[in-house]
Image 1 (spheres, one colour):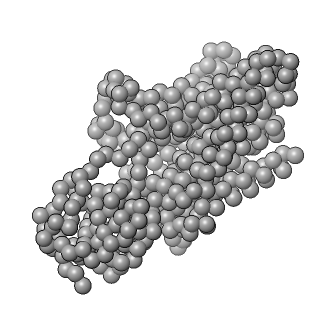
Image 2 (cartoon, rainbow, N blue to C red; image 1 turned 135 degrees about the horizontal axis):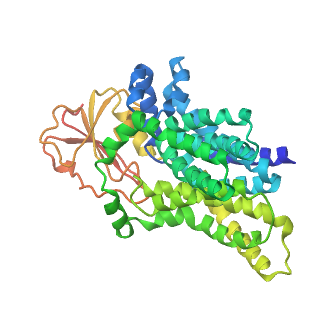
Image 3 (cartoon, rainbow, N blue to C red; image 1 turned 180 degrees about the vertical axis):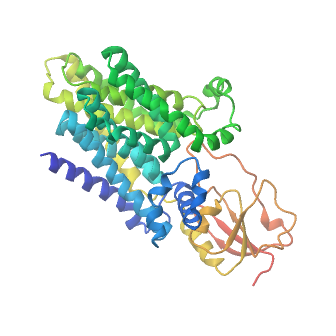
Length: 459
């Protein structure tokens, strides 16, 4: 039965993730600039491996052997995106099944794919390294850690330092989550169980802090200096944070948790793995509602995922014990059914819509400028995205229109941002290039978003 459930989930997530790219014939597989940045990084590191030592994270090292052997960075990272989203579902299913059985594992997987939008939005955004580290490698660590805390054999302990080391260097944001979530869990386990193994594991986790600091931590600190101090971040949270992305990512999972909790009342089951997942919630809540994280809406995605997994596991545990003679059981199940019924079609829509930010007008503009040497782009366009499909040298325009355009073969205008942010993009002035005397409009690509191409040396 477990194999059938897993196959159904894999077919579901694979079908949903491949539908939009195949149906809409994607050039660019992402709803943000992340894939372009990651592909560009991979390309640069392939040419000079030493660059890896100066980065915040070392996840590109996973794919580096393939590109060094001749695989293209674009194809390698794009394939990695789709393998990771399937790997997340498989890993989560096996992790939950190990401790709670098939039904909680299936519901956790189904909720992850269709009821919550976190997995979908991370996949759409191209954040494959983050998904890989937090939802594939970390659950493997959790399994070994829980086994060690329970049985304490030397053989079960050996993989823990290695996995902690991998997670420390793999992705900086995942490591911060790990410190907050895993640290809180081990501290609670130590206090309640008086476990020496928990103390040893906690010390091992703390030992990774200097390792992280002396590698990517120094670079992160330099960048962090441009962000406001912690006290400013907390005090400005309420007025500055855009609330609608947070509601979109967390409201449904939060409601599911609220109605699932009463169903677990007085039930006897192994609460430790579920508490391990819940231990991540305080750190994620702090990151979501303050500016202590660089992108609080991104932390909200992970908060939604952990709430979704918790509610799916809880519902799977409770369902065999449901008694409709109890009014609060009947009410909770009715609310859960309504939430799932409403949110599932919406969750499916997020997967199958045309989410690629590279529109047809961009493709036409890229084809039009082929053969040029220097092209100037407006602030609305990330050069890294256009650069994937052209050998042209792109320069991004600053806050002011330059005094002269003589050095550029073409100047491009776009009516809207290529990479829309969940919290809204910063306003940029409209560049009325048609009023520039030394520019001539040579091409217009109309649509919902309009792209114009100008030239100071029209052909």
